[in-house]
Image (tube, rainbow, N blue to C red; front, side, top):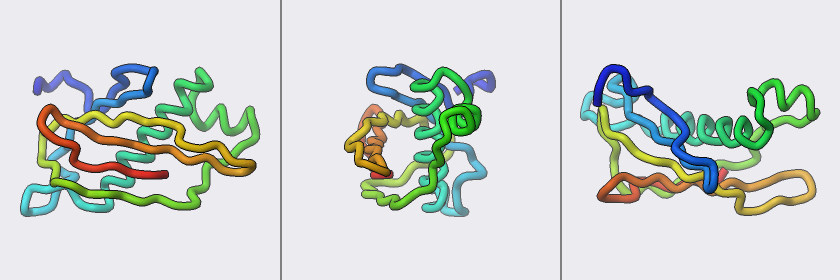
Length: 120
């Protein structure tokens, strides 16, 4: 990847798809992404969904519309590791809208695998 390639950017909005590149600092000495970093990936993808839905920054939308984003649950299914400079896509779908909460499903893919999925 070139130095000018952003770490994360929106590929499309229907469905919302984010391309992300693993940074070296997100990995342990064995060269695989730290487990806790996957939560950062998922939260960042959710923030991009809010931005696409509301047409403004996530924080501004929360203030203007009067909603918060505390997390009720976050679960993962890890299939394989991700390594430095590896690019992957996250597709975000609204799985359920409830009276006070909602559920997002995030599926990560590379050209050869599906390294993880998450429910937020």
